[in-house]
Image 1 (cartoon, rainbow, N blue to C red):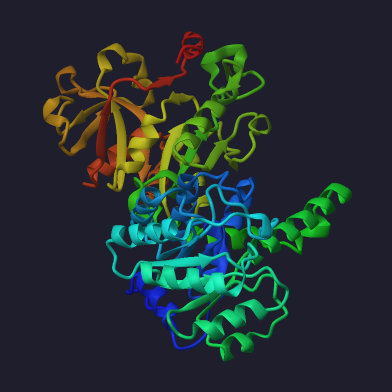
Image 2 (tube, rainbow, N blue to C red):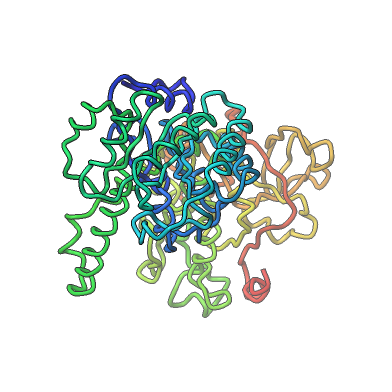
Length: 544
């Protein structure tokens, strides 16, 4: 048989139970083992009470609450598409508890539950089974009836587990109870035995005939050939706890080896690669979902930090290091910049260095050297950075190595889809010293309520704009798409080819783009950044 994904788990299980051939289901105890069982080709899962309690580290005596079992089942159900039969112990209480259990199992798409006719809290059948008391037969029949009355899915199945052989009562009692449970509405009978041979099971089946499906658990009589079960008309075999036992043996061996050898070489080739764990967790699906649902930017964006100049305005602080390595609160400015980028998921960071370049050596960054920093300017450094990225294949944020900023800045830039985007501080009248970055800006709309949902574009940028035209000051941030980056490389090359442009800066590039009618999207803010341009700024940065 093969399961059809469009059929509900309960319908799939009922088909297995009523199949005209012997069917097999395998134990699982969590989401990962359930997925492994399905991938192995099994058409159903046994959610073993022993295994679930063991993976919690507690005894199989109802020490794990039924709600904890239910939560575990939810992960198993989410991880698979094949039906799950829960080992429901005694139903976790009386008829009322049984009804609530059935309703909660159906909500989680669990196909069936098996309950055993012993007392709550139960004890595992293989621990002094002949000394364990059995439940009152009529009370247990009431529990089955209550469960069947509670189900809303007509295909949900209740399997009654008869413990008469386990408790030493013999064949007659086993048959008496099985018939009562069948009449009460049980969809199948699980007949259990602790003998190392199947004699009790086969004797029961011979007397029982084909009144309803018979399920067995050959844990103790494991040497019996499977064909014997086929010949006697058994409906379903449960491999009841072997996934857990295999895992325990493997973990014990690995733990001992690690303790003795104190190194990984001897075990690495004997364990599953981490990539296999990721596959079982369906990590690839998450990657696809992140691309679809997360705001554009984070890991799909690079950054270029221009940090080639000395920063003479800081005097002795930059005699032996460039401004980007001056410490603010004990940490270089560049570290603060990198932290802000990392905070929004940008880790592909290229730093263009020049003055005292050997001192610019923070880890996990890519460095591009502008050895002509004394005779060139920002555009030359930017060109080197863009060329290193080979005309970036993803969005790139360009910023300066001496400007601190809140993560709000790159986060907002990442979310914009325009080819060119800049940030403008509309609080320009209090920030006039920032004009050194390249000037004041005139935009299509000033910062106001009207601008809140509008698309705003740069009209002009420069140091000599009429006061009435100024809408803010450019903050030194430029985000470019791959298409824009290719264009900018060409424009920079043209600008630098002209005499007198060797020390041109990004403002000149922005002016040229506007002149050529390439739209530059503007985002407004007030604050969230600090240009380190004097010793006073260094002091102020301590409170940024």
